Length: 407
Ligand SMILES: [Zn+2]
Image 1 (cartoon, rainbow, N blue to C red):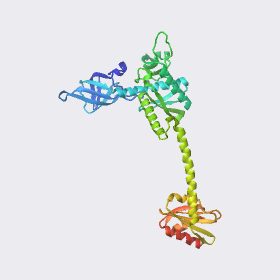
Image 2 (cartoon, helix red, strand yellow):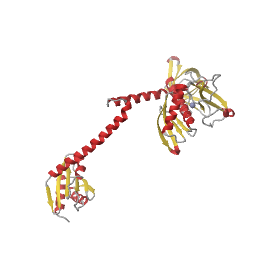
Image 3 (spheres, protein in one colour):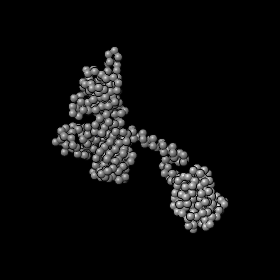
Image 4 (cartoon, rainbow, N blue to C red):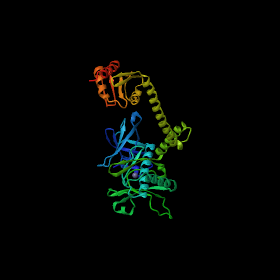
């Protein structure tokens, strides 16, 4: 069983140890500061360095650290060369990666504690800290205002109260002396992670949070700030997923988001706080412009229809219109004068037929009859129909023929 320096000396990131086991690319050590993946916290990364004899100093990158639950052995996965059993190695944990993991993990405890203080029904059911966007799955269906209240409570606490980390190993029997936020299934010795005001003769307060946890955390709660809720999602089983970021990752995201919104606001010659109002004005203008464009298109197409010669076939009067812009086809089909029939062709061989009010004729059937002559396919209702033909001239000719020889 290796000496777990990540517990006994959590801020020591460099160490020396001897190799006690090798299995392929995996190495076991007599002692290690590399935290093995567990409790929702990612494994530590970094490197091992050793004397490779003639090869000089050899370095291997630690790409994963896992604990064998059955044996308690901790395996470091190396990329590249691997030392031999008995070699002395120097280990270096990647400080930036570790720090981000500690900030996420502490942010998770602290935000969960804030929700719990607001309402104990907001109980944590699951957590996720694999990436910069972390999650708390809560029972009790917190509302958006509950979420903002928890975030504000935590912000005020971190800004005003120096909460120090204390870890303590206690026996299962002693657990009821501690105000645990969440009951634990761990038996035997339980590791408690406590964020509390630094004890002095005058302070005998209740800790801000007490949790049973085997992970690593920042030494002062404020080092996990800011803790920012990005959004919430509804999950199955009446759970609410709170997506949050903590520490430097949160600060960087807030800064990026602010800069992006400032750049966007600058295109309106305004500031980020005016952005929603500006966008609302823009949307209204867009709706107005769209309505104006639609009415101009209708007016234009009405003129074009009126300019097309009227051909008489018994009871039906037909106008034929050719369009360059296929987008105008539906506009034309909805602007047919009363008592008239309109056949529309386009350069893309898309064709349409529509009738004005007061005409008793099924244009869907007429279109299909004409297409059976000119080739192509399409269909529609009694008053309007569209299709694709192989030969525009033949299609219009077939429409005239059908109208001239009813039945
Ligand atoms: Zn923890």
